[in-house]
Figure 1 (tube, rainbow, N blue to C red):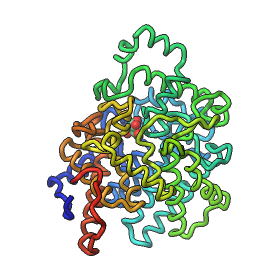
Figure 2: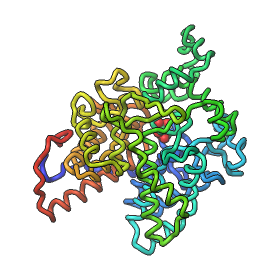
Figure 3: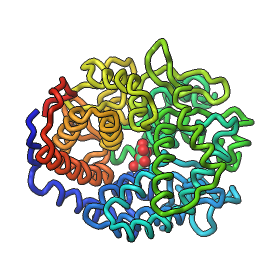
Length: 468
Ligand code: GLC
């Protein structure tokens, strides 16, 4: 790896900007044309992180537009639906209005997604001068604080400092193997088992909208889709009320990725509040302090890794996925544990193909190179890992991962996800967070090369992930 970063094809950042413009729906950005016609929570956060470079005002608008959908109990829903008549079916599927906390004039989903909001707010703030930054933070702090309080009020009933998730869609890594195993083993209803036994899933698959835009081998299986909608229907019947959901034994998992992002978000929230001289409630501060130590409850001393776990029984979900690297991003684990995780990242059999980081390790029986969150590389998880690597001082690993990520985009365009061995584009194209995070990674690369020029770099070369 040389000290001078590789140059990216001219125009790549122009193309990324054009995609964000094309997916702009007047104040918010859809993830991709056709397949994702609404506003998604964590997508908008990643999108704002890219938008801030060219147009910080537009980045602020992207995040402020999320407030339209916030519930009065503090929750940010994972989807705010497009209100055009053609999407009546999507809105009706969720019926967010069955819960009295849902907003009045806007239809949303009834669950949340990884809480990237505090990070995005903070990142956008870094592109503003101090006066603008304070104003920006003050504008969003009440809503953001209410969101973090909601987690403690509703999603941490045993006060463990860890939040629980009630549906795979809440994790953002929708089809990730640990959750899919739960779905198959415990939560597949009899009628879906019947479909499996009679092989009628292929027929039903013909009615799937997503398969008009991506081949079946790159998406959920039809049985999984049916089970996910069944789980969503059960949540709707309980009016998306966590207490009622828990009483009826539906999904309740303390998801590792989600909690890592939440813990990091707590740190960001405190930084934002400090800058804005805003007083956070004492009970929230105490809860956040508890959360900062809570990841160690998910550490497995024998396997030397972190797992998600069942909320009720505390049974760890011992199935490998990219989640095991996310504690780097949380930033609260010890240097010793970070080192163990980085060794997994360096391991060619696990997380080290040509275009890392695969969403499932290569040696896992669940690894599928093309299928959604079951193998392909995604740019948002790379972004989180790059950040985590820097926090623990693995700058060369971070730089190398930026290079392979950008190379993947140059080779294959702004795909939703990529084959981790070949960089073949998969899923939707012109995907907004891929475009936005490409812009951000290009800026990170420039910043690194400038700091290398000013400070002589003496760290010995390591056998990093990939040589750029
Ligand atoms: C898929 C992804 C999810 C994302 C959504 C919109 O469902 O799994 O993380 O938010 O698409 O892009």
